[in-house]
Every structure is written in structure tokens, then in C-alpha cells.
Image (cartoon, rainbow, N blue to C red; front, side, top):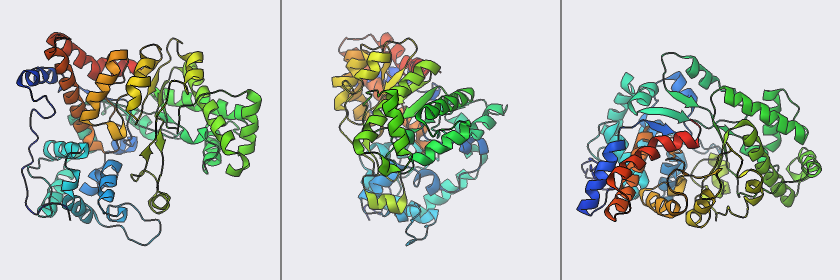
Amino acid sequence: MSSTSTTTPLAPHPDRLFPADPGARAVARTVYDAVRDLPIISPHGHVDAALIADDQPFPDPAALLVTPDHYVLRLLHANGVGLQDLGRPDHSGAHPLPDGREVWRRLAEHWDDFTGTPVRYWFETELHDVFGLTEHPSATNADEQYDRIAAALATPALRPRALFDSFGIEVLATTDGPADDLAAHARLAADPSFTGRVLPTFRADAVFDPSRPDWRHVVASIGEASGIDTGTHDGLLAALRDRRRYFIEHGATATDTGVLDAGSTPLSAAERARIHAAAQQGPSGVTAAEAVAYRHDMLFRWAEMSVEDGLVMQLHPGVVRNHHAPTLERFGPDTGHDLPAVGAFTEPLRPLLEAFGTTPGFHLVLFTVDETVFSREIGPLAGFYPAVYAGAPWWFIDTPAAIGRYRAAVTDSAGFTKTSGFIDDTRAYCSIPARHDMARRADAAYLASLVVTHQLSEEDAVHTARRIVSDVPRATFKL
């Protein structure tokens, strides 16, 4: 048990994340005040559209705030809490699911393990601002806080749609599989009582890698959804184009792709058809080298399709998925053991950018979990190619300190307008406003540093902050 037994006040400081220097802090306050209440534009995230379409009360505090959030799971797991004790189903059958109260107790007992992390920052903000808590979680108050949050979740004010409005969300993009019927999105679009925008994002990672065990299943499901035979590579490309059009009809403005690396060397039509046919026999039908070549070609084809249909292409490479095989086997994916890999973009993307990097209307947003490439590769690429935008710090580096390093690394080469705006990338619905507020404060601090060193006027800093929050994501994601 890591947490102390006493409770401490929970009251986020109004100047949190602002500079210590009084002059710079005053400028940061002015900049932040200009954007603090602007609507949230969230062009990339993982909230399920059905959550908002169904508008049912959340089941319990742990199911909302702990179990679905891999940021929380990984830190608790790292400090000795088993995933079976955090509400994740144990496929081995060795442990029954605990109730929500038990899960919340584990969080409260280990509260001090989050000290200094962005997870604690988000938690403090949402527990205070959304649920009105005035003390940090602890072993002493765990049950009392659980009951308070559970009672609040039963009220109309904390149903998903009411929170959507109170959070000030204007646009929320989801992440959706290539064969998804988008029924929840259709219901929201047709509902006159819902005035927000919830947009699907087309994600088809499995089709890129024929060595994946689920590749044939996903390829077949795309064929079924489109009515096009995906047994051939040409058929798969045609089916993907059809599904992309379907997503566009339902409001999509972007795709998202998570691959191990950004390689984009195209293959000849004959070679990619040959590998596709071999992969239809099963994962053992292709060599490791053939699978990589196929994946690189598919990334090139993906850009080709974006040039054709206008969907923004988001690229999230550089993550080793499911690093711990025993955890994957017992608890499935998205349980905290995806880990960063070394990033590279300049050479891997050269074939793609030589073909499409200067094509009008093509937008390629590059994300990384290796922040060394911001100044070395992503910033300079965005500073030349009209198509390239520098994606915000993501996942392991969507932290206050990393946001400042990102701005310093990218702004020299690409300025502010060739960036993405903040990306919350979350399944944790109630953390959305806390995360966006964090980004607005961190950007205010960075802009204040430019003002006090006489690189920018205070008026320009305020104007730039407004653009970062509103104009930049709208333009980058064609919203």
C-alpha cells in the first residue's frame, strides 16, 4: 500500500504550469485567460460514439475512471497491482472480476504512486472540477469518495450528453474499424436534440500487415461490408476506397494508421498482388521481409487514397504493441504494455512525400513517441512540405514538460500553423477537459517565454494561443 492513511486537500492551483517568474507568470495568465473557455476541438480520440448516442448513466466510478484508461492501468500495474484487480477480465479464468468499489480502493491505496505524473494532474482536475471532491483519494476516504462519485453519476448532469455540453466539446472524433456500420454516428447525426459533432475516423491497421493473425479476418470483413471481393489486392484496394467513402458520408474527415515504422516504398502491382495471394493462405504464407514490403506499399497506397478522397492522413508509428505476451494472453490488448520504439521519418517517408508531399489538399499529420525526432525530422519536414503537419506530443509524451519541449523543437522549423492542435487521444471521457486545459496552460507558458524575451508581443501571443486552440485543428483536420 503506497498511499498515506491521512487525506490532503484537493484544490488545483489557479497558476499551475505557469512560469515561476512573476513577470512571465502574469503574461501566461493573460494568454490562458484568452483561451480557457474556448470550445474543445478533439480531432483524435477513442471514446465510443455509442456512449454518447445511448446516453446511459455510467455504471460506476471505477468503470469510468480506472478500468478503461491504460495510462492508469500501467502505472498501477508497475506498482504491483494486478490487472485482474483493476477490472480487466482475466481470460485464464483464474480470477473473477472485482466490483467497482474494490477497484477504486486499489487506486486510492496507490494514489501516491501517481505523484508528479500527468495522470495525477488529469485526475486531480477531473475529480475536483467534475465531481466536486475536495480531498485526494486515500485508503481512509476511498469508500466515501466512491459513494459520492457513484451518486453523482446517477444524476442527469453527469450523463454522457450533458457532460459533452458542460465540457464545452464542439467536435469529438472517434476511432472506428474499417467494417464498422457507424450506426451510433448516424443516430447522433439524425438526433435534433444533439447539437455537437461526433465524427468517425477510419482506422484499418490490420490490413497493412499480412503477418498478423487477424489479417485474413479483417480483410474478409471489409469485403463483406463493401460487397467487393477482397481475395485479390486490387479487390482490397477497391473495397477500402468504398469504405472510406462510406465514412466520409458519415462525417469523417480523417484516417488514422498505427504501424511499426513509417516506411513507404511502393511495390509493383504484380509483386503486391503476389504477396496478397500468398497471405490469403495464412500468416505462414509470407516471409517477414514480404510482410514488411507489403506494409510499406500499403502506406504509400493510403496516401494515394487520401489524395483522391481528401481524408486527412494521421500516422502514428513507432510503438511496439503488446510487449508482454503473457499479459496479452491473459488480459488482451490496451492493457499498458505497448512501448515506444525509436522513430524515423525523413528517409522512410521519402517515397511517399516525393509522390504526394506537394500535392494540393493532401494533409499528413505525423505523430511520434520519440521526441528526439521533433527537431531532427518532423519539424523540418513540416517546414518544407505543404502536406506535412507536426502532430502534438502523443501518449508517453503528452505531458506538460514535453509540450514545452515540442513547441521549442518544432516552432523553429515549422512555426505554429503547421501543427495539429492538441490531441487528447483518450478513452477516459471525463479527462478530456482536463487534458485540453493542461495543453492550453502549457502553451500559454511557452508563449509567455517568447513575450518576456521580446520575441513576441503579448497581443501576438494571445492571437497565437487562440489559433492553436481553434484555427489550427480546424484547418489541419479540415473541420
